[in-house]
Amino acid sequence: MNFKRPRGTADILPDDQPYWSHVDSTARKVANQFGYRRIDTPTFEDTSLFQRGVGDETDIVQKEMYSFEDHGGDGITLRPEGTASVCRAYIENGLHNSPQPVRMFYMAPMFRYERPQAGRFRQHHQFGCEAIGDQSPKVDAEIIELGWKYIADLGIKNVTLRLNSLGDPEGRTTYLSDLENYFRGVAEQLPKLDRARLDRAPLRVLDSKAKETQALADAAPKSVDYIKGEAKEHWDELLSLLDNLKEVYPDFSYKVDHRLVRGLDYYNRTVFEYEPLDAGGQGTLLAGGRYDPLIGILGGQETPAIGFGSGIERMILELKKQEAEIAPSAGPDIVVVTLGDAASAGAKLATALRAANVSTVLAPSRSMKAQMRYANQQNASNVVIIGDREVENGVASVKNLVQGGDQSEVALDAASIAEHVRAAGNQ
Image (cartoon, rainbow, N blue to C red):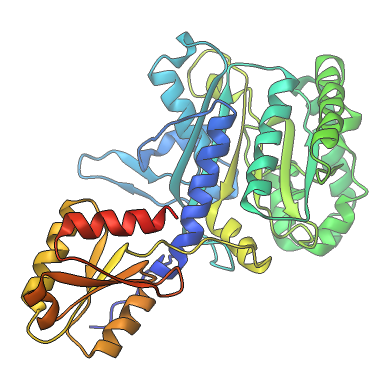
């Protein structure tokens, strides 16, 4: 048999792990700086959670979910996105009794049956943040700033923020009616897929990737022209807060994009996406928005909330594209190289060094030259060389591969060698 990984999945090999470690550590660091704490939810949930929360007419529910009936007859779906699960956990665990807003972040695999392409997989991984329990535009600005700092701290440059407001249900009824009437008037110019979207959910047409639809959408009614009252005050204050961010982050920029609606039904008011300047609307790195109705839709009490999700594979693709400097994986502190009949002594020494909390690898039994080449391939900091002479004299040759290959003789015991390499590493 010739087994291969399922289509739309990827093996994350050791050479790619430095990128994953970089993204993981940066995400945790930035989330903690903003006071967000980690939450982990199950990989699968009740199918109806996503049908109700994400929306029956969305592409995710219509075409992309991995759903099945388990042995007990329950409808189960592998998690296609993170927000609905976090909101379910907020309701079920009574987090509304905690000080509000509750700030949470997650890093988890997501599953969507879609056409695989660069940076997009059927199993992908996501970093997400959610702030639940505060309707202030200051929280919108906070989570937008968190997303910016995450991208900047990763080392990714030339990124801009696209921003829009979907308003509240009161103004949206008129807006959606005018939007539908506009697209009905140009329906013959729409691709077949977008004509079907127009029948199901007119707002989805604005989210189309078809160039002919995008050109028509540029002239469509704009949601920000329909927002009034509190929604308008919220929008104006948010724009003012984002202008203030420019004073702290000189590279930060944003633009209002009237075609930005996001693809999920639970969004209201603020929606946003970060993308590279040269992406042309096809390379979103991080996206989210306000979803005040969602917790009520899922059976909780009405609770304002905002969040974002960021695909880790897409972020790593951009890191590679921009040739960002990523620290390589740290190699072992020591590779033990043995000569002659010293293999047994070398194995014993490697065990003792590990017991002394020194990362140690025993080189495979090959020639001296091959073992040294192996140590370099492992990115080792030191090699400890022992042969028949060293065993007889109770010494080991310790060669520092980081500091120009300096070589010293050290007593052949784990404590002495550990002390020596630690001292050399602190120089």
